[in-house]
Image (cartoon, rainbow, N blue to C red; front, side, top):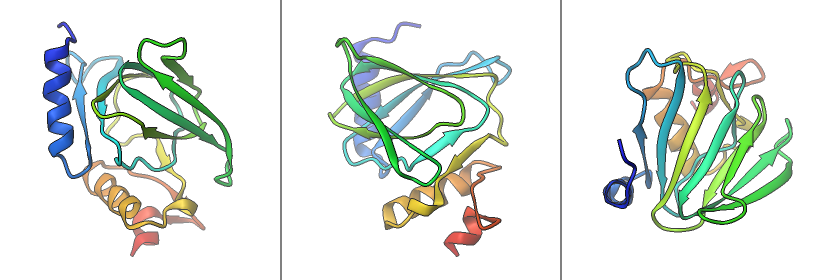
Length: 166
C-alpha cells in the first residue's frame, strides 16, 4: 500500500466531516498483527484528552501538517511540549510507555503515522487523566471512547470514568 496525497486528502475530507474532527485508518494486515499501526488524521479543534498507554511506547511521525504534543506528570501538570511538523527537523516523537500526553492539531489536514508496541487489545491499556476532564467536549470524547472500546479504564478515587461522568 502506498500512502499518497490522494489517500491523505480522502481521509482529511472524512475528518473534516466528522463530529470529532478526526479519523483513524488501520494499517494492520489483520487483527492478529503483532504491532499497532495506523494513520491518525486530525483537524484543528479535535479533542484528545490527556492520556497514557501503560504498556506500550507510542511513535508519532508527521506525514503532513503539524501538532504540539504536550507531556504531563501524574497530577496533570505540563512538564514538556514538542512541536512536530512534517518535513521539518522535528517530525517524529517517541512517547515512552506510561507517559501522560495530549496532542493539539495545528493545521488542517494533519496526518500522523502512529505505531505502538504489541498487538491491539480490545481491553486496552489506555488511561485518561480524569482530573482534567472538565469541558463538555472532553466529556463527550471520554463517553465516546467508553462506549466504543471495551476496557476504557481510568480511575479517580477508585471509580471508573463512567462512574465519574455520571
